[in-house]
Image (cartoon, helix red, strand yellow):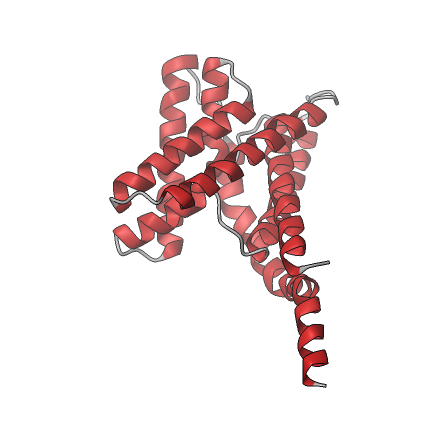
Length: 225
């Protein structure tokens, strides 16, 4: 299997797992992660599918990138749009699958479901970043914020998350008169997904990278012979 095929496979699996994790958090009804809070807020407010609102929210993130960076890279944004449409498709698909099962009413089961969603999202992020292919607009926007305001990436990430949650909360309050997509799950996601991902990256990423680049390493050995 060619290296690029392996990277694409890992990337698509990562996006799928990300969407599945978000869908499980929606099913838990305790609040979604900061990254998905605006898309879900728009979905709740206007009755659109989560896939469509994910696309709309990410188009907004691309627009903000253009405003902050004061440049337009059509090729870069075209790639981001392709990724967004794929992720939006996965969001609708995984939410449809998750909602085939009855929504949990027991608070304990809802928290268990939320916890499972954190692990699935973390695994998705691990695969998605290990593939080293173009990032989604929200992540690209975080890099732009970091460069534009001379912030560390971690601080820019926190800033982006807080602004996204704030806008999502305002949208929900204005249109459905409740916090809707924002809840205890949003706060827990912001804290625990990073905590789960932290030890996961050094433990599993080298193995994934070895699998991706194995063919290249083997070819180098053959060439030396």
